[in-house]
Length: 61
Image (cartoon, rainbow, N blue to C red):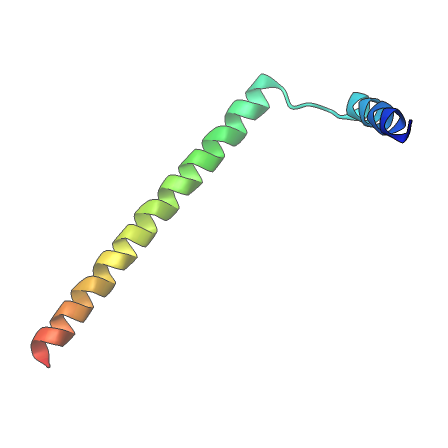
């Protein structure tokens, strides 16, 4: 019986939710994608520099 009450409450709360528009979804998706690509490039470059420095250090030592 409590399960039905729970799902009734969930349904009631879901009706209160303000869902984003298609334009907001698209904008937010591009923000996430571009930010992710930026961090991928940043950490790839950072990793490459660290590897280069370590190789130089090992060759020098």
